Image 1: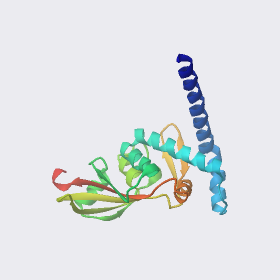
Image 2: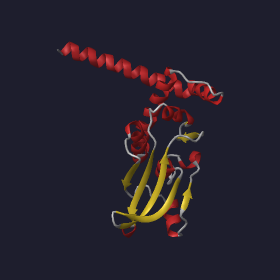
Image 3: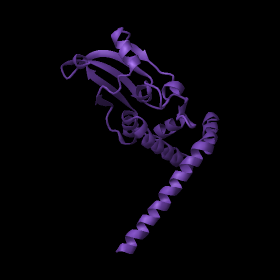
Image 4: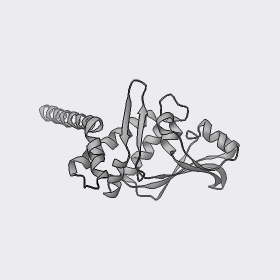
Length: 199
């Protein structure tokens, strides 16, 4: 029994190690080839789809540590069955968002991804979770709330640079849209809200 458990653990360790190595290889080298194929309107193969999924899972996992709410919201795309998902929290209310609500400047809000995604930015959590979103004030569960509405989809062909201080990571987000088209990721509308009376 002990030998079987030991063999299973060893096999799992090897598989996980290979997945991680492939994920790093794909992120640092092969993703550029996939992006080129997409731009040339060529079909991507199964290896590329699996590698993109590995990359997505890795980013979500790291993102959960980097920004827990954003990690949760992105993980939801893997198995989401709802058109709308609600998050009741004030963690998304960054200094810029609070200023916009205070000045009653509602409507579309966007961040500078390469700057505001930085680990050292006060806007980090909101920017990663909500870029871009629509700010509004409305009623939820009978209470007046500050609301941020964000459509979780990877349809926009963009790239993001995550500045981690020691090094930078470039991710081509249009890769994830290929997973959406294959029904491997499921878009939805995210509603973040917090009661106005409690701020």
